[in-house]
Image 1 (cartoon, helix red, strand yellow):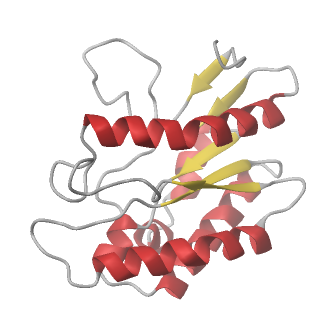
Image 2 (cartoon, rainbow, N blue to C red):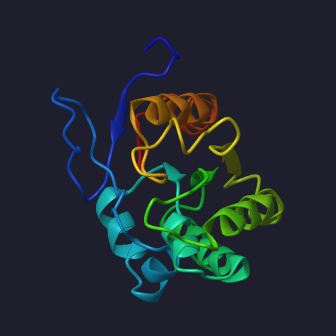
Length: 189
């Protein structure tokens, strides 16, 4: 409410992920999934049919980078996912993250460079794929994020990392919700 956004219903095929408090937290944040895997298994259309969102927050690519998948291949998967979102709703507002840095304690020699390459490519990809009817907004979840102080293991956020992610997402998500809402109830995946 403080952000001037009300009547929001978070949607998804997964329940809220347990914060110790009751909240509206349905989502499709499937842990361990790859963007390329979601496309290969054609999973998104089914999720969208159930959830029917107006706005999608997309923070994908970390697991693809960890698996040393080429940036161009990840972006091809992103494009397919966006096409599927627009097939579900032609006026879908899509908010895409430049992912957080990775320095996994278990090792991943290509992760740091892979994250940088993907993040560097996302703005141009988003600008090319964005439309007036279905805009894509990029969220910078990388800048100011420190794997030493903002993660529990060099990858997954701790409380400090979660606050930084919330701060990064807040304004772009608020703008997307307001742009999509036009006075009626809207949903977010």
